[in-house]
Length: 249
Image (cartoon, rainbow, N blue to C red; front, side, top):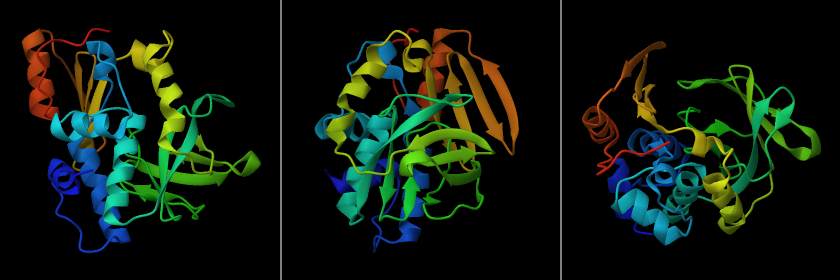
């Protein structure tokens, strides 16, 4: 882990102290600089959550990734800066009373007090207080954490369940089978769709397939990118990703 190179990647000076204010800034800057994306699956690239492979992809090659990659590497940065980080398994909400399998998502608990998630796509811009059960207002929405059965914790955004957290800490290696499954299972949402998204100030910019979506002050606009040249230019100009071919869904 080259902390200086990682901080350069996200445009953040090294904090003088690993405190709550620095954690807040690091979380926002990471999501503004490093896109949530599943392009590797559609480019025929194998995704590895080995720390060296993650650093090479996200920092050296200036790509993004999905939860196991983004939160997996961000945890190492935070630990390198002096924070205490637990990697926790989550079950993504599937509608109604249904949740996905355990290890469906990776999130982080930092210093035992903050839920940090830079790898869920549209989510909170800043850390959420783990012990607060009231509504927490964030540019990404109104979030609430609620107790669930078995000591688990539900995360809701604007009143809608997002995922259920298993509170015990796990090593990153526990998520390797789930990462492989998300890449290879034909019904995986990551195989069936193509997305690249990052924060843009308090708003968000997203490429969903060939549609460029902007959210500005709550207003959504969509632009269809019909040519391959337009699509490649959008990846480069809006997300800093320079591709030599089009991802295929």
